[in-house]
Image (cartoon, rainbow, N blue to C red; front, side, top):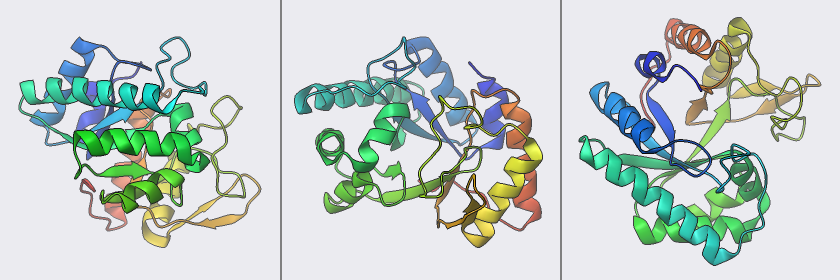
Length: 234
């Protein structure tokens, strides 16, 4: 859905779909191999089992069902990564599961319980102040918060859903300005002009949006020009 090969030289970490909301064994293999060759950290990008909906539809899964789905995805990507010399360095949720676990402690607990069972030391990347990061921290996982340079924010600090027009920002200059402001000042402007305070350890860019490679190139150049040192949080 995007030009992954062109993105890898521009990023420091890559969240890789594990086959349930997107991805397949060959794509995962190619992605992990490219990441290893370019010293890019690999993250398990875990979503609901929803290929048809790209993981953007919330699902009322039981604790055991979600626990199993997370384990399945972690094991799949980890096995593929090890086959090419890479490793899974962190976990980041996708789409509706990401949004759901901001406030849903039950689903967040199922996700963290599965990660804990698989690898108690695996870092978790997520939304600042989310239930997911709080539960992960309490379980002893290293936690890192992120901000979205190419997504629109509501004044309450939540993301505008991708189903709404304007949720994903496509203008390279605008996204670059937001990225630099987030990295150097810890703030971003919401849709109504409200200035939100965020102190992220990672900046997210989406690889499946139109022109995503040129946007990423502009963001990297802008951050470097601003004196920001780029390295993977993991």
